[in-house]
Figure 1 (cartoon, rainbow, N blue to C red):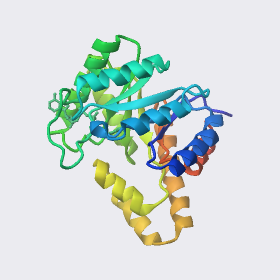
Figure 2: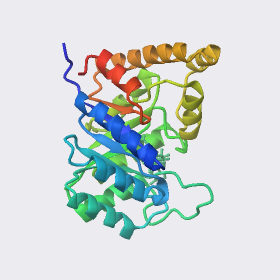
Figure 3: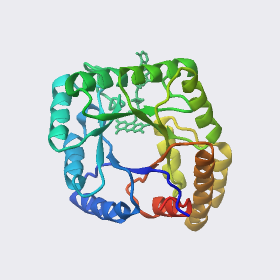
Figure 4: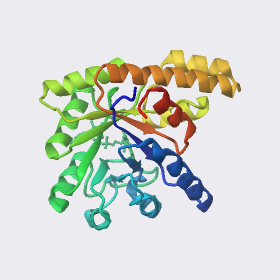
Amino acid sequence: MKKNIPFSFEFFPTKTDVGAEKLRQVHQELQPLGPEFFSITYGAGGSTRERTLAAIRDFNGQGTPVAPHLSCIGDDKTRIAELLDIYKAQGIDRIVALRGDLPSGQVGLGELPYAQDLVRFIREHSGDHFRIEVAAYPEMHPQAEYFDADIRHFAEKVQAGANAAITQFFFNPDAYFYFIERIQKLGIEIPVAPGIMPITNANNLIRFADGTGAEVPRWIRKQLQAYGDDAQSIKAFGHEVVYKLCERLLAGGAPSLHFYTMNQTDPTRQLVSDLGLI
Ligand code: FAD
Protein backbone atom coordinates (compact mmCIF):
# COMPACT_ATOMS: atom_id res chain seq x y z
CA MET A 1 0.00 0.00 0.00
CA LYS A 2 1.21 3.51 -0.82
CA LYS A 3 2.46 5.48 2.19
CA ASN A 4 1.08 8.97 2.35
CA ILE A 5 4.46 10.66 2.89
CA PRO A 6 5.45 13.68 0.80
CA PHE A 7 8.89 13.79 -0.81
CA SER A 8 10.84 16.33 -2.82
CA PHE A 9 13.79 16.24 -5.24
CA GLU A 10 16.82 18.52 -5.47
CA PHE A 11 18.74 19.35 -8.66
CA PHE A 12 21.79 21.48 -9.30
CA PRO A 13 21.94 23.72 -12.39
CA THR A 14 24.28 22.36 -15.05
CA LYS A 15 27.12 24.19 -16.79
CA THR A 16 26.47 23.11 -20.39
CA ASP A 17 23.58 22.86 -22.85
CA VAL A 18 24.08 19.09 -22.96
CA GLY A 19 23.84 18.97 -19.15
CA ALA A 20 20.70 21.11 -19.21
CA GLU A 21 19.09 18.78 -21.75
CA LYS A 22 19.96 15.76 -19.64
CA LEU A 23 18.47 17.46 -16.58
CA ARG A 24 15.23 18.11 -18.48
CA GLN A 25 15.07 14.40 -19.15
CA VAL A 26 15.69 13.53 -15.48
CA HIS A 27 12.98 16.02 -14.52
CA GLN A 28 10.55 14.33 -16.93
CA GLU A 29 11.38 10.93 -15.51
CA LEU A 30 10.97 11.98 -11.88
CA GLN A 31 7.91 14.20 -12.26
CA PRO A 32 5.43 11.29 -12.68
CA LEU A 33 6.47 9.97 -9.24
CA GLY A 34 4.51 12.87 -7.77
CA PRO A 35 7.04 14.88 -5.73
CA GLU A 36 5.79 17.77 -3.63
CA PHE A 37 8.35 20.08 -5.30
CA PHE A 38 11.67 20.20 -7.15
CA SER A 39 14.33 22.48 -5.71
CA ILE A 40 17.24 23.97 -7.66
CA THR A 41 20.47 24.94 -5.92
CA TYR A 42 22.14 28.34 -6.22
CA GLY A 43 25.89 29.00 -6.14
CA ALA A 44 26.96 31.25 -3.28
CA GLY A 45 27.82 34.84 -4.21
CA GLY A 46 25.45 34.53 -7.18
CA SER A 47 27.85 32.27 -9.09
CA THR A 48 25.02 30.25 -10.71
CA ARG A 49 22.46 33.05 -10.78
CA GLU A 50 21.73 32.79 -14.51
CA ARG A 51 21.85 28.99 -14.59
CA THR A 52 19.55 28.65 -11.57
CA LEU A 53 17.14 31.11 -13.18
CA ALA A 54 17.25 29.16 -16.46
CA ALA A 55 16.54 25.84 -14.74
CA ILE A 56 13.66 27.40 -12.80
CA ARG A 57 12.26 28.79 -16.07
CA ASP A 58 12.55 25.32 -17.63
CA PHE A 59 10.67 23.51 -14.89
CA ASN A 60 8.22 26.10 -13.59
CA GLY A 61 4.63 25.62 -14.73
CA GLN A 62 5.14 21.98 -15.72
CA GLY A 63 2.89 20.54 -13.04
CA THR A 64 5.13 20.19 -10.00
CA PRO A 65 6.04 23.34 -8.03
CA VAL A 66 9.66 24.48 -8.11
CA ALA A 67 11.59 26.01 -5.24
CA PRO A 68 14.72 28.01 -6.04
CA HIS A 69 17.52 27.97 -3.47
CA LEU A 70 18.82 31.42 -2.65
CA SER A 71 22.03 32.10 -0.74
CA CYS A 72 23.05 35.42 0.74
CA ILE A 73 26.73 35.42 1.67
CA GLY A 74 28.77 37.79 -0.48
CA ASP A 75 25.66 39.07 -2.25
CA ASP A 76 23.77 42.34 -1.80
CA LYS A 77 20.18 43.15 -0.94
CA THR A 78 19.40 44.78 -4.29
CA ARG A 79 20.35 41.69 -6.29
CA ILE A 80 18.50 39.41 -3.89
CA ALA A 81 15.39 41.61 -3.98
CA GLU A 82 15.54 41.45 -7.80
CA LEU A 83 15.49 37.66 -7.70
CA LEU A 84 12.63 37.60 -5.19
CA ASP A 85 10.60 39.84 -7.49
CA ILE A 86 11.36 37.68 -10.54
CA TYR A 87 10.30 34.53 -8.71
CA LYS A 88 7.14 36.14 -7.35
CA ALA A 89 6.21 37.34 -10.86
CA GLN A 90 6.70 33.76 -12.11
CA GLY A 91 4.20 32.50 -9.56
CA ILE A 92 6.80 30.77 -7.41
CA ASP A 93 5.91 30.70 -3.74
CA ARG A 94 8.56 28.53 -2.10
CA ILE A 95 12.24 29.42 -1.49
CA VAL A 96 15.07 27.51 0.16
CA ALA A 97 17.00 30.25 2.03
CA LEU A 98 20.66 29.62 2.80
CA ARG A 99 23.79 31.41 3.80
CA GLY A 100 26.01 29.62 1.30
CA ASP A 101 29.78 29.28 1.46
CA LEU A 102 32.05 31.94 0.03
CA PRO A 103 33.89 30.73 -3.09
CA SER A 104 37.62 30.54 -2.30
CA GLY A 105 39.33 33.85 -2.90
CA GLN A 106 36.15 35.90 -2.45
CA VAL A 107 36.24 38.18 0.56
CA GLY A 108 33.49 40.17 2.24
CA LEU A 109 30.40 38.59 3.73
CA GLY A 110 28.00 41.01 2.03
CA GLU A 111 25.00 42.72 3.57
CA LEU A 112 23.39 39.52 4.82
CA PRO A 113 26.06 37.41 6.54
CA TYR A 114 23.80 34.61 7.90
CA ALA A 115 20.75 32.72 6.68
CA GLN A 116 18.67 34.28 9.46
CA ASP A 117 19.46 37.71 7.93
CA LEU A 118 18.24 36.43 4.56
CA VAL A 119 15.03 35.01 6.04
CA ARG A 120 14.36 38.35 7.77
CA PHE A 121 15.08 40.21 4.53
CA ILE A 122 12.72 37.97 2.51
CA ARG A 123 9.95 38.64 5.04
CA GLU A 124 10.64 42.41 4.92
CA HIS A 125 10.71 42.48 1.14
CA SER A 126 8.04 39.95 0.17
CA GLY A 127 5.90 39.61 3.30
CA ASP A 128 4.32 36.19 3.62
CA HIS A 129 4.38 35.43 -0.10
CA PHE A 130 7.04 32.73 0.10
CA ARG A 131 7.07 29.56 2.13
CA ILE A 132 10.66 29.64 3.40
CA GLU A 133 12.68 26.47 3.92
CA VAL A 134 16.01 26.68 5.76
CA ALA A 135 18.89 24.26 6.29
CA ALA A 136 19.26 22.11 9.41
CA TYR A 137 22.26 20.08 10.57
CA PRO A 138 21.48 17.07 12.79
CA GLU A 139 25.23 16.45 13.11
CA MET A 140 25.99 20.17 13.58
CA HIS A 141 27.12 22.69 10.96
CA PRO A 142 30.91 22.29 10.61
CA GLN A 143 31.60 25.95 11.47
CA ALA A 144 29.33 26.12 14.53
CA GLU A 145 31.14 26.79 17.80
CA TYR A 146 29.35 23.84 19.46
CA PHE A 147 26.08 21.91 19.14
CA ASP A 148 23.92 24.10 21.41
CA ALA A 149 25.08 27.24 19.63
CA ASP A 150 24.07 25.73 16.29
CA ILE A 151 20.64 24.80 17.70
CA ARG A 152 20.27 28.37 18.95
CA HIS A 153 21.13 29.78 15.52
CA PHE A 154 18.66 27.37 13.94
CA ALA A 155 15.97 28.68 16.31
CA GLU A 156 16.85 32.24 15.24
CA LYS A 157 16.11 31.32 11.61
CA VAL A 158 12.71 30.02 12.65
CA GLN A 159 12.02 33.17 14.69
CA ALA A 160 13.01 35.23 11.65
CA GLY A 161 10.21 33.56 9.67
CA ALA A 162 11.22 30.13 8.32
CA ASN A 163 8.29 27.77 7.77
CA ALA A 164 10.15 24.48 7.33
CA ALA A 165 13.63 22.98 7.14
CA ILE A 166 15.61 20.44 5.14
CA THR A 167 18.62 18.73 6.69
CA GLN A 168 22.13 18.18 5.47
CA PHE A 169 22.52 14.52 4.57
CA PHE A 170 23.47 12.09 7.31
CA PHE A 171 23.49 8.33 7.86
CA ASN A 172 22.78 8.12 11.58
CA PRO A 173 19.02 8.35 12.19
CA ASP A 174 19.51 8.96 15.93
CA ALA A 175 21.24 12.25 15.11
CA TYR A 176 18.05 13.38 13.36
CA PHE A 177 15.78 12.26 16.21
CA TYR A 178 17.97 13.98 18.80
CA PHE A 179 17.98 17.20 16.75
CA ILE A 180 14.16 17.12 16.58
CA GLU A 181 13.94 16.48 20.32
CA ARG A 182 16.21 19.44 21.02
CA ILE A 183 14.34 21.91 18.82
CA GLN A 184 10.97 20.72 20.13
CA LYS A 185 12.19 21.50 23.65
CA LEU A 186 12.56 25.08 22.41
CA GLY A 187 8.96 25.04 21.21
CA ILE A 188 9.90 24.68 17.51
CA GLU A 189 7.29 22.67 15.65
CA ILE A 190 8.13 23.38 11.99
CA PRO A 191 8.51 20.28 9.77
CA VAL A 192 12.12 19.20 9.26
CA ALA A 193 12.60 17.01 6.19
CA PRO A 194 15.60 14.69 6.34
CA GLY A 195 17.91 15.31 3.35
CA ILE A 196 18.64 11.92 1.79
CA MET A 197 21.78 11.29 -0.25
CA PRO A 198 21.63 8.11 -2.36
CA ILE A 199 24.93 6.21 -2.36
CA THR A 200 26.03 5.27 -5.88
CA ASN A 201 29.73 6.05 -6.03
CA ALA A 202 32.23 5.87 -3.16
CA ASN A 203 34.59 8.64 -4.32
CA ASN A 204 31.79 11.10 -5.07
CA LEU A 205 30.12 10.46 -1.74
CA ILE A 206 33.32 11.00 0.23
CA ARG A 207 34.30 14.08 -1.78
CA PHE A 208 30.85 15.55 -1.28
CA ALA A 209 30.84 14.72 2.43
CA ASP A 210 34.27 16.26 2.92
CA GLY A 211 33.15 19.40 1.10
CA THR A 212 30.04 19.86 3.22
CA GLY A 213 31.23 18.60 6.58
CA ALA A 214 28.67 15.77 6.48
CA GLU A 215 29.73 12.54 8.19
CA VAL A 216 30.02 9.21 6.45
CA PRO A 217 30.34 6.60 9.23
CA ARG A 218 33.48 4.47 9.22
CA TRP A 219 31.56 1.25 8.60
CA ILE A 220 30.11 2.70 5.39
CA ARG A 221 33.42 4.22 4.20
CA LYS A 222 35.33 0.99 4.82
CA GLN A 223 32.72 -1.19 3.12
CA LEU A 224 32.66 1.09 0.08
CA GLN A 225 36.47 1.03 -0.09
CA ALA A 226 36.43 -2.76 0.13
CA TYR A 227 34.24 -2.97 -2.99
CA GLY A 228 36.91 -1.12 -5.03
CA ASP A 229 35.71 -0.86 -8.66
CA ASP A 230 32.75 -3.18 -8.18
CA ALA A 231 30.04 -0.65 -9.09
CA GLN A 232 27.21 -3.20 -8.82
CA SER A 233 28.06 -4.09 -5.23
CA ILE A 234 28.44 -0.42 -4.28
CA LYS A 235 25.02 0.35 -5.70
CA ALA A 236 23.36 -2.62 -3.99
CA PHE A 237 25.00 -1.84 -0.64
CA GLY A 238 24.27 1.90 -1.02
CA HIS A 239 20.64 1.23 -1.78
CA GLU A 240 20.22 -1.05 1.22
CA VAL A 241 21.90 1.41 3.62
CA VAL A 242 19.88 4.40 2.45
CA TYR A 243 16.62 2.44 2.19
CA LYS A 244 16.98 1.28 5.81
CA LEU A 245 17.84 4.81 6.91
CA CYS A 246 14.67 6.16 5.26
CA GLU A 247 12.56 3.39 6.79
CA ARG A 248 13.82 4.23 10.27
CA LEU A 249 13.29 7.93 9.74
CA LEU A 250 9.73 7.42 8.56
CA ALA A 251 8.95 4.95 11.35
CA GLY A 252 10.27 7.55 13.82
CA GLY A 253 7.97 10.26 12.51
CA ALA A 254 9.93 12.17 9.81
CA PRO A 255 7.27 14.28 8.08
CA SER A 256 8.72 13.98 4.55
CA LEU A 257 11.93 13.12 2.68
CA HIS A 258 14.06 15.42 0.50
CA PHE A 259 16.28 13.57 -1.98
CA TYR A 260 19.60 14.95 -3.22
CA THR A 261 19.16 13.40 -6.65
CA MET A 262 22.58 14.51 -7.94
CA ASN A 263 20.68 15.00 -11.23
CA GLN A 264 20.19 11.26 -11.65
CA THR A 265 16.93 9.36 -11.98
CA ASP A 266 17.52 5.73 -11.06
CA PRO A 267 18.91 5.73 -7.49
CA THR A 268 16.18 8.06 -6.22
CA ARG A 269 13.39 6.41 -8.21
CA GLN A 270 14.34 3.01 -6.81
CA LEU A 271 14.35 4.34 -3.23
CA VAL A 272 11.02 6.11 -3.55
CA SER A 273 9.50 3.03 -5.17
CA ASP A 274 10.87 0.46 -2.69
CA LEU A 275 9.81 2.66 0.24
CA GLY A 276 6.23 2.50 -1.04
CA LEU A 277 5.95 6.27 -1.50
CA ILE A 278 4.56 6.00 -5.05
P1 FAD B 1 23.46 29.63 8.66
O1 FAD B 1 22.17 29.14 9.18
O2 FAD B 1 23.66 31.10 8.54
O3 FAD B 1 24.59 29.00 9.57
C1 FAD B 1 25.96 29.01 9.17
C2 FAD B 1 26.85 28.91 10.39
O4 FAD B 1 26.83 30.14 11.11
C3 FAD B 1 26.43 27.85 11.41
O5 FAD B 1 27.59 27.29 11.95
C4 FAD B 1 25.65 28.63 12.45
O6 FAD B 1 25.67 28.00 13.71
C5 FAD B 1 26.39 29.94 12.44
N1 FAD B 1 25.56 31.10 12.77
C6 FAD B 1 24.33 31.38 12.34
N2 FAD B 1 23.91 32.57 12.79
C7 FAD B 1 24.92 33.09 13.52
C8 FAD B 1 25.13 34.29 14.25
N3 FAD B 1 24.18 35.22 14.33
N4 FAD B 1 26.31 34.47 14.89
C9 FAD B 1 27.30 33.53 14.82
N5 FAD B 1 27.15 32.36 14.14
C10 FAD B 1 25.99 32.15 13.50
N6 FAD B 1 24.78 26.19 -0.41
C11 FAD B 1 24.74 26.94 -1.52
O7 FAD B 1 25.66 27.74 -1.75
N7 FAD B 1 23.73 26.85 -2.43
C12 FAD B 1 22.68 26.01 -2.24
O8 FAD B 1 21.78 25.95 -3.05
C13 FAD B 1 22.67 25.21 -1.05
N8 FAD B 1 21.64 24.39 -0.78
C14 FAD B 1 21.61 23.71 0.42
C15 FAD B 1 20.47 22.96 0.74
C16 FAD B 1 20.39 22.28 1.96
C17 FAD B 1 19.14 21.50 2.28
C18 FAD B 1 21.47 22.34 2.87
C19 FAD B 1 21.42 21.58 4.17
C20 FAD B 1 22.61 23.08 2.56
C21 FAD B 1 22.68 23.78 1.34
N9 FAD B 1 23.77 24.58 1.01
C22 FAD B 1 23.76 25.33 -0.14
C23 FAD B 1 24.94 24.63 1.89
C24 FAD B 1 24.88 25.79 2.90
O9 FAD B 1 24.87 27.01 2.23
C25 FAD B 1 26.12 25.67 3.79
O10 FAD B 1 26.01 24.55 4.63
C26 FAD B 1 26.49 26.91 4.58
O11 FAD B 1 27.77 26.70 5.16
C27 FAD B 1 25.54 27.24 5.72
O12 FAD B 1 24.35 27.65 5.29
P2 FAD B 1 23.15 27.89 6.33
O13 FAD B 1 22.02 28.42 5.55
O14 FAD B 1 22.92 26.69 7.12
O15 FAD B 1 23.80 29.03 7.24
